[in-house]
Length: 71
Image 1: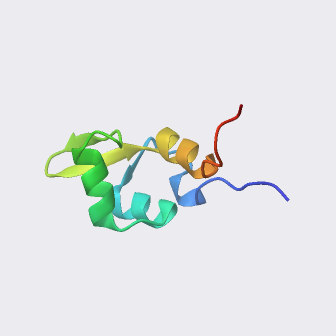
Image 2: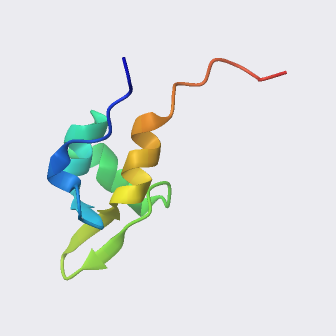
């Protein structure tokens, strides 16, 4: 079994909307907005909205939860 990448709706795109990011990563939209505001999530402002790089989303979707130090 292989790890799948984020939904194909993002294939060929460079950026995703906040609702898309929230759905893919499993967080509330307010949490995503807070991460952008605090500088933890890279984003580009387009008018009154923000777009998050798909490459960053893919990297986050493939990261396992930390299980301690790699010693």
